[in-house]
Length: 516
Image 1: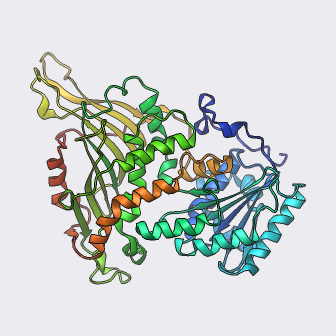
Image 2: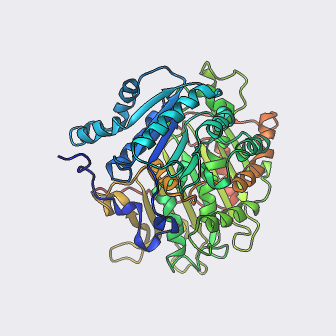
């Protein structure tokens, strides 16, 4: 088999010809160098390198144009890094089929060690990148350099300064330099703005890609299509028909030895301020005038600017029993591992509709979903309101699905009603099609120069403006988390808040993912 012939055809799940954006028409320039900073860390091993390998498998990264550089403080060889990441790239089921591809991919990886705040290591890194570019006959300034910062935010300023000083393209001949930064991007408004200013002094906004992997999830990316490509939803998606919206993130495990890190941030900074707020934007935003990234992000910012200040009486915090048993967590920790709160959007479409965001660890299930609950049917001639309201549910993970809860006639001779669903379960409907990981999509978008699924600076600022006052009250001990048992639904007070906000739970109905 000739090198590279194992590439499979690019899957249609990555693109649809009717949605080709302007960047697809931009000709590729010189060779592509992807630099993973923090290459020896967990994020790089478990997410970044596997995403790159899967893009390589599918032909989006070509062997004749790409080279991958790992950079970290650890003193290891090229082969050491390859050995460390190998087990994360393939599973046992595909090991034999992908063995040749894996071997080729690993040979594209080179490691450079150095500190994050001195020029010596970054000069060596630039030399290695330049040697690769020369070997691929790329003219100076035409190559593409993508720096992925799989690092803690505390080192972003020094690393970005070193990249700007030592590793940029030497001239502008159609190439580019782009920076991908991970969350958490700050801890409050002040720290986020300081970080934005430090990086913004070095790079333009078009060069900075603030990644939120939730924006790369299949069902999250489907939101715009669902809302604006289906006539069915256009007249329904407003305060006249929708009673409340829930955006939920639940994990059935605790901090898993990451207690010290988690305690520094808590569930609001870790999940709600970024992941769930991004989902809220897509649910609530107005129709953009086009699919251009800036037009979409403009509408997201407008939604965030319309969110009213969060009221303490519409917040329930929790901390699971045993959280402080972790030796890395302070005995007097006030950090919430659970939070439910009501966000209210002050605009014509959503006035009076509560958006309930909920996230927690050590709960009784693992899932992430959007639940849109519609208002009661006026003039209920079937006396079936007690069975539950219509709901449109988008299951983000696991078992990706969309289903609509409807009241239908129970089969039989009697005129009795029952709740059922119209169900689109991805595993059943799209058999044989692999759903790409979020990081695959977002890295591919970065290479293509599409910032639609990345967080813009003004968007980040408004998001922190919403949550910073609440976070400071928690940090100061003014709001206390309520203890709850691991494996439960969380504090009972959270369910009481849901009921007070208007959510009516359906009893006796459970959605079961269909089997193949």
